[in-house]
Image 1 (cartoon, helix red, strand yellow):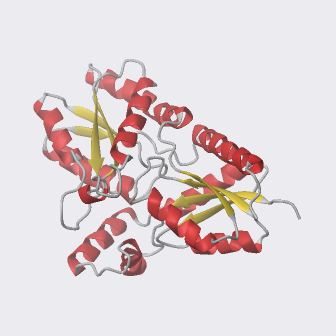
Image 2 (image 1 turned 45 degrees about the horizontal axis):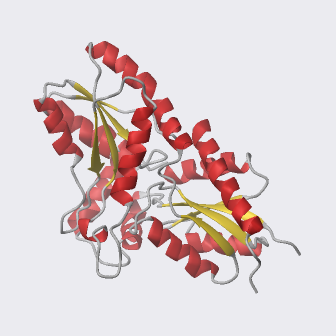
Length: 312
């Protein structure tokens, strides 16, 4: 039998109901207990948005990508169903022998992409040849996909305000300790890659010059997290005299709690309290350009697999 290739998309995962949140959070922390106050706060955030559509949207992104390729596309989640290990087991049961693995977090970090890779390799063992995409923060089609969502909103809001409005690009924060260089590891590339994506998106919006970058959704665990925070950045912009700001999350490829609650509810409320109108572009979700970006990345990986020397 010849090689049978596939694509595996990886995402964070999200609980399907409020009752599943404690188990989900235990997966996120690797079994470390969380204070009841934190669990209650996360439950509140999910209740405010009804439920996170992340799983449904990720499966749709996989379906759209599969329609563009001649290989099957699977989905594995690190912290909820369908779990990565289960997706890999299904691939093996289906006769797949090699896979391009793409993390739907384009910016590479040890706390995200590194953990996803470990989970895939542990599940696959020597039963699958893996081409793992380390990061695609610099992908120009990805930048254009975000810009396609941003441009019409920026033009309309700038016209409404009578002046170009600033844009705050955001990505999920991570604990500072996880990205600092150590004796046995270099500095984590995450922050620079996130800012590179932001810069590429800004370059795709003619006339956009006033833009900032901030990290959002800092966790509730102890110790410092990457900043500046969105709240700090919004406060600075208000002090500069701005009355409206666009928050454009470029670290997220579909709607979920970090967008539907953190931006649409919490940051909008924060902006309202300081006299700042907050808007955001539509999320990529089923974006044609996002599918095109994933198609190009997948095809490159499939080519590498097809030309790699066989291993015994």
